[in-house]
Length: 316
Image (cartoon, rainbow, N blue to C red; front, side):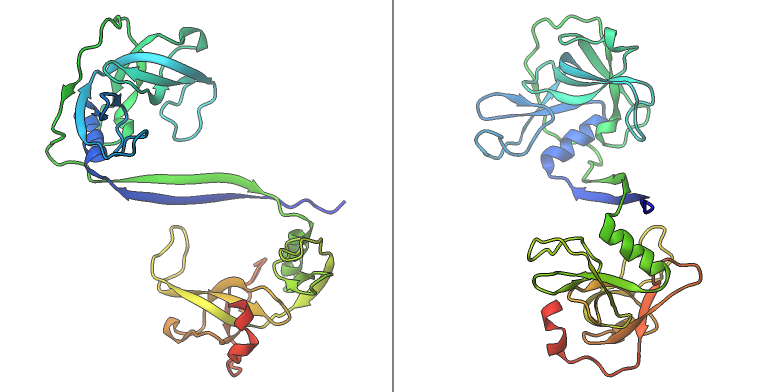
């Protein structure tokens, strides 16, 4: 049996967004230990607030203050918290309808076990010691002995605070294990011996690099291996001006699509050995390998004349 390849991979980036007046007031309010909702045209109070009525699509902006206590409408127990979740001990995910609101807020409940949680139980906000204007300013909910009673009328709020929060940055991260199939495993194994291998479609005869195991045009399996390159042609490119985290490459640099000789699909790679502003479409390039590397570090100019546009236009 051939070795089954696998590797842990992480996709991570900071998601940055600006806030409109409603979301700005909501998050700034949390920083000030105030929970705000928004009232719709038919009198419903939505918490967390949205900027448009989910039923009528009308813009809504009438802010109201609701209570920091409420009732659990449904829940699910989480016995094994994951990295960066609100609590590092087992907890319950809960939907809480705060007193004065008509919708429920998703958050976590700090409880000793699932037997201590039930639909209809009363809970209240536990505020974070340090608050910055984020949903995590609510550290969690905790059980509360107070009775629901008749909720008071939500108090109108002008949404004005000192130093309002106008934007948020949320780190997004996905950890997963990738296992290539038969075709890509053969491709990776060939790279270890500094060869580039693709697969030819038995129907249209196109050669795909990296191989996919099936032709994306004809939908048939591919198994005929074809060695291509190692030289190729830059079909298109972009100049990267933002330095990536944990990537030891100085900006600006060029990332390009390269059509290897004999291939009918362009792969992407970094271009080096030439000033970034001299990279161009049609530039002939070859791979540069570093000691112990399992794949080319980058591609550099070969010194050959540029390829004619007609020779690679179908791969742009």
